[in-house]
Length: 184
Image (cartoon, rainbow, N blue to C red; front, side, top):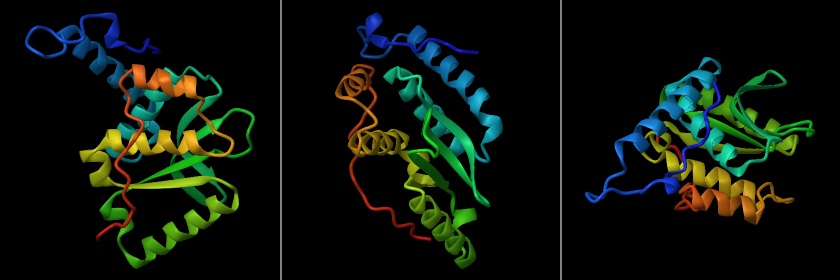
């Protein structure tokens, strides 16, 4: 099921009370649910679904059909959570790992994560890791970091015009930058 992106600028964005109209909220919820149903079977956790849907919605706004986001990307003997690829490239440009505490806190799991990171780097793939609480509490900041990484890659994977489309759709592209250091 492919639904058009709801652009709140097409309607009165805020009612007199300062809230979005119910119809706008409903359209966004239905769109999110449809995308979650599409991506969900390939994901291992709700945080992967949540971030994967946000990435796909942003890529749809960009309007570049050569950009895709797929769950469960296989590289050698490892499985990565989400991969952002450009058709025609042999490898994804960005791999996103959604690190929940239960599966990434033991010494063995950390060692496995380090090997996955090293393998991705050896293939020229940018690997971004987000802990579960980041994705749960600040998913828009996670998406913004991904989009910012795409914009400043060499060569850039997002044009200024595409960034303008994201801005117009209200998708944040500039996260508060923090280093990834899990505290478990």
